[in-house]
Image 1 (cartoon, helix red, strand yellow):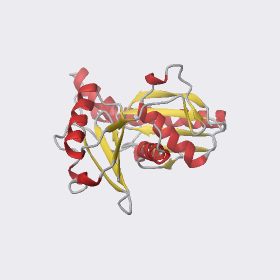
Image 2 (tube, helix red, strand yellow; image 1 turned 90 degrees about the vertical axis):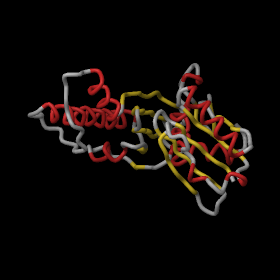
Image 3 (cartoon, helix red, strand yellow; image 1 turned 45 degrees about the vertical axis):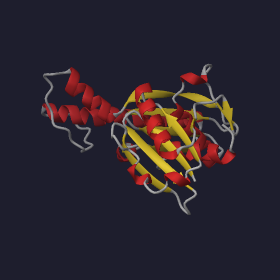
Image 4 (cartoon, helix red, strand yellow; image 1 turned 135 degrees about the vertical axis):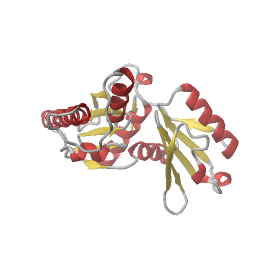
Length: 242
Protein backbone atom coordinates (compact mmCIF):
# COMPACT_ATOMS: atom_id res chain seq x y z
CA UNK A 1 0.00 0.00 0.00
CA UNK A 2 1.10 3.56 -0.71
CA UNK A 3 0.09 6.49 1.48
CA UNK A 4 -0.20 9.85 -0.29
CA UNK A 5 -0.43 13.05 1.77
CA UNK A 6 -1.27 16.63 0.78
CA UNK A 7 -0.27 18.74 3.79
CA UNK A 8 -1.47 22.31 3.29
CA UNK A 9 -1.38 25.40 5.45
CA UNK A 10 -4.50 24.48 7.40
CA UNK A 11 -5.78 21.14 6.07
CA UNK A 12 -4.28 17.71 5.52
CA UNK A 13 -5.69 15.28 2.96
CA UNK A 14 -4.57 11.71 2.49
CA UNK A 15 -5.18 8.79 0.18
CA UNK A 16 -4.25 5.14 0.67
CA UNK A 17 -3.84 3.16 -2.55
CA UNK A 18 -3.70 -0.60 -2.95
CA UNK A 19 -6.75 -1.31 -0.78
CA UNK A 20 -8.96 -2.49 -3.64
CA UNK A 21 -10.22 1.08 -3.99
CA UNK A 22 -8.81 4.41 -2.78
CA UNK A 23 -9.33 5.09 0.92
CA UNK A 24 -9.29 8.83 1.64
CA UNK A 25 -9.57 11.22 4.54
CA UNK A 26 -8.95 14.79 5.68
CA UNK A 27 -8.20 16.61 8.91
CA UNK A 28 -7.02 19.92 10.31
CA UNK A 29 -3.21 20.14 10.25
CA UNK A 30 -3.13 21.30 13.86
CA UNK A 31 -4.91 18.16 15.12
CA UNK A 32 -2.78 16.03 17.44
CA UNK A 33 -3.85 12.91 15.50
CA UNK A 34 -4.73 13.96 11.93
CA UNK A 35 -4.44 10.41 10.53
CA UNK A 36 -6.81 8.45 12.76
CA UNK A 37 -8.56 7.01 9.69
CA UNK A 38 -5.46 4.94 8.96
CA UNK A 39 -5.71 2.83 12.11
CA UNK A 40 -5.26 -0.81 11.17
CA UNK A 41 -3.38 -0.04 7.94
CA UNK A 42 -0.03 1.23 9.17
CA UNK A 43 1.75 -2.14 9.09
CA UNK A 44 0.75 -2.63 5.43
CA UNK A 45 2.05 0.73 4.18
CA UNK A 46 5.13 0.28 1.99
CA UNK A 47 5.70 3.87 0.82
CA UNK A 48 4.72 7.35 1.98
CA UNK A 49 4.78 10.30 -0.44
CA UNK A 50 4.12 13.82 0.86
CA UNK A 51 3.40 17.09 -0.93
CA UNK A 52 3.54 19.94 1.56
CA UNK A 53 3.47 23.72 1.81
CA UNK A 54 3.10 23.64 5.61
CA UNK A 55 5.52 25.45 7.89
CA UNK A 56 8.75 23.65 8.80
CA UNK A 57 7.54 23.08 12.36
CA UNK A 58 4.27 21.56 11.11
CA UNK A 59 6.16 19.42 8.59
CA UNK A 60 8.55 18.18 11.29
CA UNK A 61 5.63 17.28 13.57
CA UNK A 62 3.94 15.34 10.76
CA UNK A 63 7.24 13.65 9.90
CA UNK A 64 7.70 12.36 13.44
CA UNK A 65 4.12 11.09 13.53
CA UNK A 66 4.57 9.19 10.26
CA UNK A 67 7.86 7.61 11.32
CA UNK A 68 6.31 6.48 14.59
CA UNK A 69 3.31 4.90 12.88
CA UNK A 70 4.55 3.42 9.61
CA UNK A 71 8.22 2.50 10.11
CA UNK A 72 9.04 3.32 6.47
CA UNK A 73 10.90 6.33 5.04
CA UNK A 74 8.88 9.45 4.25
CA UNK A 75 9.44 10.66 0.67
CA UNK A 76 8.88 14.38 0.10
CA UNK A 77 7.88 15.40 -3.41
CA UNK A 78 8.71 18.97 -4.37
CA UNK A 79 8.25 21.01 -7.54
CA UNK A 80 10.44 19.87 -10.42
CA UNK A 81 11.78 21.32 -13.66
CA UNK A 82 9.94 18.74 -15.74
CA UNK A 83 7.96 15.51 -15.53
CA UNK A 84 5.89 13.57 -18.05
CA UNK A 85 6.19 16.37 -20.62
CA UNK A 86 5.13 19.11 -18.17
CA UNK A 87 7.76 21.85 -17.80
CA UNK A 88 8.05 24.47 -15.06
CA UNK A 89 8.39 28.17 -15.90
CA UNK A 90 10.23 28.99 -12.64
CA UNK A 91 13.97 29.65 -12.92
CA UNK A 92 14.33 28.28 -9.38
CA UNK A 93 11.76 25.50 -9.08
CA UNK A 94 12.39 25.17 -5.34
CA UNK A 95 10.49 28.46 -4.97
CA UNK A 96 7.25 26.95 -6.30
CA UNK A 97 4.82 25.39 -3.84
CA UNK A 98 4.75 21.62 -4.24
CA UNK A 99 0.94 21.61 -4.27
CA UNK A 100 0.82 23.80 -7.38
CA UNK A 101 3.21 21.53 -9.27
CA UNK A 102 1.40 18.34 -8.32
CA UNK A 103 -2.01 19.79 -9.20
CA UNK A 104 -0.63 20.89 -12.58
CA UNK A 105 0.81 17.42 -13.15
CA UNK A 106 -2.62 15.92 -12.47
CA UNK A 107 -4.21 18.34 -14.94
CA UNK A 108 -1.60 17.60 -17.60
CA UNK A 109 -1.99 13.83 -17.26
CA UNK A 110 -5.77 14.23 -17.35
CA UNK A 111 -6.05 16.19 -20.61
CA UNK A 112 -2.65 16.49 -22.37
CA UNK A 113 -3.86 19.82 -23.75
CA UNK A 114 -3.85 23.46 -22.66
CA UNK A 115 -5.54 24.05 -19.30
CA UNK A 116 -5.79 26.06 -16.10
CA UNK A 117 -5.72 24.74 -12.55
CA UNK A 118 -7.45 26.81 -9.88
CA UNK A 119 -6.83 25.60 -6.33
CA UNK A 120 -9.17 27.45 -3.96
CA UNK A 121 -7.77 26.76 -0.51
CA UNK A 122 -6.33 28.98 2.24
CA UNK A 123 -4.72 30.78 -0.66
CA UNK A 124 -6.10 30.70 -4.19
CA UNK A 125 -3.59 29.65 -6.82
CA UNK A 126 -4.17 29.91 -10.56
CA UNK A 127 -1.79 28.27 -13.04
CA UNK A 128 -1.86 28.09 -16.83
CA UNK A 129 -0.30 25.37 -19.00
CA UNK A 130 -0.18 25.40 -22.81
CA UNK A 131 -0.75 22.49 -25.20
CA UNK A 132 2.99 21.68 -25.21
CA UNK A 133 2.99 21.19 -21.45
CA UNK A 134 4.80 24.45 -20.71
CA UNK A 135 3.76 26.31 -17.58
CA UNK A 136 2.87 29.84 -18.68
CA UNK A 137 2.79 31.27 -15.16
CA UNK A 138 0.09 31.95 -12.63
CA UNK A 139 -1.21 33.89 -9.65
CA UNK A 140 -1.35 33.50 -5.87
CA UNK A 141 -4.08 35.35 -3.97
CA UNK A 142 -5.57 35.21 -0.46
CA UNK A 143 -8.51 32.84 -0.17
CA UNK A 144 -11.96 33.76 1.15
CA UNK A 145 -11.29 32.54 4.70
CA UNK A 146 -7.92 34.29 4.81
CA UNK A 147 -9.49 37.59 3.71
CA UNK A 148 -12.26 37.27 6.31
CA UNK A 149 -9.72 36.50 9.03
CA UNK A 150 -7.56 39.45 8.01
CA UNK A 151 -10.50 41.85 8.32
CA UNK A 152 -11.45 40.44 11.73
CA UNK A 153 -7.91 40.55 13.11
CA UNK A 154 -6.38 43.61 11.46
CA UNK A 155 -9.39 45.93 11.33
CA UNK A 156 -10.71 45.98 14.88
CA UNK A 157 -13.60 48.37 14.22
CA UNK A 158 -15.03 46.28 11.38
CA UNK A 159 -17.37 43.96 13.25
CA UNK A 160 -19.28 41.42 11.18
CA UNK A 161 -20.70 37.92 11.18
CA UNK A 162 -19.54 35.52 8.53
CA UNK A 163 -22.08 34.61 5.87
CA UNK A 164 -21.87 31.84 3.30
CA UNK A 165 -24.25 33.66 0.96
CA UNK A 166 -22.58 34.66 -2.29
CA UNK A 167 -24.29 38.00 -2.85
CA UNK A 168 -22.40 40.62 -4.89
CA UNK A 169 -24.85 43.52 -4.48
CA UNK A 170 -23.64 46.62 -2.59
CA UNK A 171 -24.06 45.95 1.13
CA UNK A 172 -26.26 48.03 3.45
CA UNK A 173 -24.63 47.04 6.73
CA UNK A 174 -21.02 46.39 7.74
CA UNK A 175 -21.62 42.64 7.66
CA UNK A 176 -23.15 42.82 4.19
CA UNK A 177 -20.40 45.12 2.95
CA UNK A 178 -17.73 42.62 4.04
CA UNK A 179 -19.43 39.42 2.91
CA UNK A 180 -20.75 40.88 -0.35
CA UNK A 181 -17.38 42.54 -0.93
CA UNK A 182 -15.56 39.22 -0.67
CA UNK A 183 -18.00 37.63 -3.10
CA UNK A 184 -17.63 40.64 -5.43
CA UNK A 185 -13.84 40.33 -5.33
CA UNK A 186 -14.02 36.60 -6.00
CA UNK A 187 -16.37 37.21 -8.92
CA UNK A 188 -13.74 39.56 -10.37
CA UNK A 189 -11.20 36.74 -10.04
CA UNK A 190 -13.56 34.43 -11.92
CA UNK A 191 -13.89 36.98 -14.71
CA UNK A 192 -10.11 37.32 -14.90
CA UNK A 193 -9.67 33.56 -15.23
CA UNK A 194 -12.23 33.43 -18.02
CA UNK A 195 -10.47 36.32 -19.79
CA UNK A 196 -7.09 34.57 -19.55
CA UNK A 197 -8.55 31.23 -20.63
CA UNK A 198 -9.83 32.88 -23.79
CA UNK A 199 -6.57 34.76 -24.42
CA UNK A 200 -4.46 31.62 -24.00
CA UNK A 201 -6.92 29.40 -25.86
CA UNK A 202 -7.21 26.96 -22.97
CA UNK A 203 -9.05 23.70 -23.52
CA UNK A 204 -10.09 23.16 -19.90
CA UNK A 205 -10.24 24.75 -16.46
CA UNK A 206 -9.84 22.44 -13.46
CA UNK A 207 -11.04 23.61 -10.06
CA UNK A 208 -10.05 22.03 -6.76
CA UNK A 209 -9.75 22.97 -3.07
CA UNK A 210 -12.10 23.66 -0.18
CA UNK A 211 -13.71 26.76 -1.73
CA UNK A 212 -14.08 25.22 -5.21
CA UNK A 213 -17.88 25.15 -5.07
CA UNK A 214 -18.01 28.82 -4.07
CA UNK A 215 -16.02 29.84 -7.13
CA UNK A 216 -18.23 27.65 -9.27
CA UNK A 217 -21.33 29.27 -7.76
CA UNK A 218 -19.89 32.68 -8.68
CA UNK A 219 -19.75 31.64 -12.33
CA UNK A 220 -16.41 29.89 -12.85
CA UNK A 221 -16.94 27.49 -15.75
CA UNK A 222 -14.70 24.66 -14.63
CA UNK A 223 -14.48 20.95 -14.00
CA UNK A 224 -14.41 20.39 -10.23
CA UNK A 225 -11.86 17.69 -9.43
CA UNK A 226 -11.37 16.72 -5.80
CA UNK A 227 -7.85 15.87 -4.67
CA UNK A 228 -5.79 17.02 -7.65
CA UNK A 229 -2.63 17.29 -5.55
CA UNK A 230 -3.10 13.67 -4.48
CA UNK A 231 -3.72 12.71 -8.11
CA UNK A 232 -0.37 14.23 -9.05
CA UNK A 233 1.36 12.42 -6.19
CA UNK A 234 -0.22 9.16 -7.28
CA UNK A 235 1.17 9.66 -10.78
CA UNK A 236 4.66 10.07 -9.31
CA UNK A 237 4.20 7.02 -7.08
CA UNK A 238 3.18 4.87 -10.04
CA UNK A 239 6.24 6.02 -11.99
CA UNK A 240 8.39 4.78 -9.12
CA UNK A 241 10.98 7.54 -9.56
CA UNK A 242 11.14 10.75 -7.54
